[in-house]
Amino acid sequence: MASQGKRQSKIVLTKPFSLEVDTTDLEPGYSYRAPNLISRLLSLLKNVRPGSDLTNLQLPPLFNFPKSQLQCYGESVYCTTSNSNLLTQCNNQQSPLERLTSVVAWSISTTRPTSFGVAPYNPILGETHHVSKGNLNVLLEQVSINPPVSALHATDEKENIEMIWSQQPVPKFRGTCIDAEVHGKRVLKLRNHGETYEMNCPRLSIRILPVPGVNWVGNVNIKCPETGLVAELSYNSSYSFLGLGGNSKLIKGKILDSSSSNVLYEIDGQWDSTVKVKDSNSGKVKVIYDAKEVISGLKTPTVKNAEGVWQTESALIWSELTQAIINKDWDKAREAKQGVEERQRKMLRERESIGEGWTPKNFLVSYSNESGLECDCSPIHKWVPAAPIIAL
Image (cartoon, rainbow, N blue to C red; front, side, top):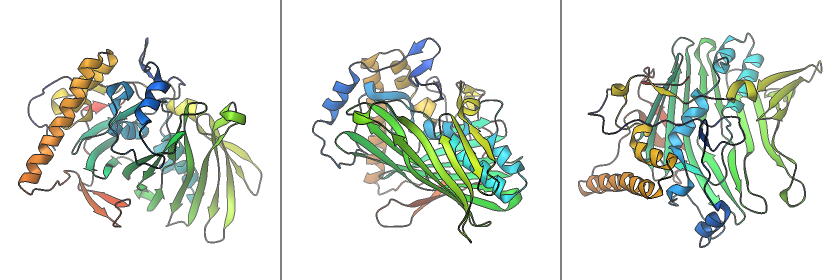
């Protein structure tokens, strides 16, 4: 997995999504917000019927946040504050129950605030994103575009930890909102304990009317087959009349022993604040997750070795578009986006003309049903190598 050819343009990285309310901040002193957002969004959707799948909807750059969806997936894993290491905590807990509790906290930490009205770029086929944070090395690849499937492999050789994800967003227009379900499975392996934790992802709900907003909702189940312990989480939104007021970041749930159905812990809190567990036997309450400590004030990753960056890297492929959006140069942004998309179409046409299919470079992909909504992405390599891009 070496560098592929000469560098064509500079690598542009932007600030990750963090706890701060205004996630449209790109850099200190700079804020991006599309003008006349609601009217423009309604105009874009005026010919879309409720229930329509928006997977292939082409957004103009005005509606793009300056980074790829691959980067957003990766950031939810490697972008945490320097004084927090939830994965190490998962590994260091003494009992299966406390390890599952720590995995719940880590899973909640991957739920990141996002911004209304702007979306990341749709990754192109074969696009990759490769970043390291300490001993954790993270690699993502867009293994399919029809359906759009992103695969993630992350390893920490020192802690003997591995995670494997497959992600397929399916956004649908509901008339007054857009619901984006995220199909696929997330697996976290604590090899020192011989434990595998399987989990899913909440869905993203984008409300257009009556009050614009975006939030994570739905149910997340985390199970460990080796111990029989299960966590059931529910991401909820609570709004008052006409969508005003209320609390939109609620999370509730429980941890139970699947063999007896006994509830061991009750979970309650807000995923953008603190989450607590209450021992069902003793009544003791403790904080297991503090968003401010984990995802507040996150820093932009940095390039340690520019020559080691692959030509398929997200931050390189989309660099011209990202820079144009930062500069609010919309003519240049449209030109840059069209250039990337046309290069992809040309590659697909050339492959089709010679009957050559696409084979991912870092994953083996298999679909478990005819609908293509369930897939398994198995990494080809045991360990992810250290990356030329470093998360701070």
